[in-house]
Length: 169
Image (cartoon, rainbow, N blue to C red; front, side, top):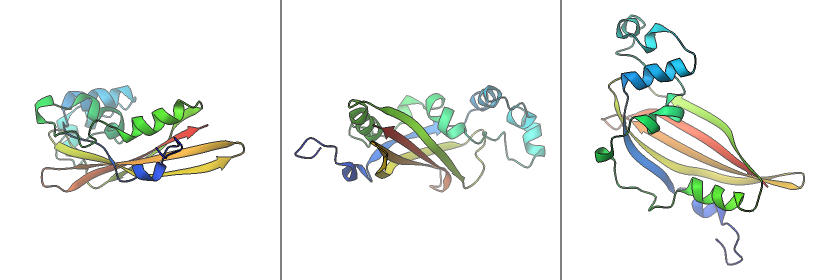
């Protein structure tokens, strides 16, 4: 916050949004595929996945955003919270929504560095990549861009997820 009580947006850029360790589990992958109405055998049958060229059952494309962090975290393996208890997404958007307006999930982008398959254990870290504002008539739109990178046991990137939240005053 500035001296006038305004939210200093640039001070949030580069701040961590979280970190963790997740396991890609067969039941979670298969159930997620079913929930998005993808009934292809490669998401539930290892032989079908191998025949398709995967080393095991692959995770569906949007699995990282919707399911992985919510169902496959084991408490005793989690690193210390890098946010210091202040998650930038909640803090920035919470302060903005307290002034009224709407929060929307603006867009989601994935960069796949290699297929993620059942049995993988991944570490992830999130960071605020950008915050910016645009005028839309009499309204101000604030965009919060968060990038989450998932890496394998060798520290190699596997998936990078970029999410854009927006607040319209």
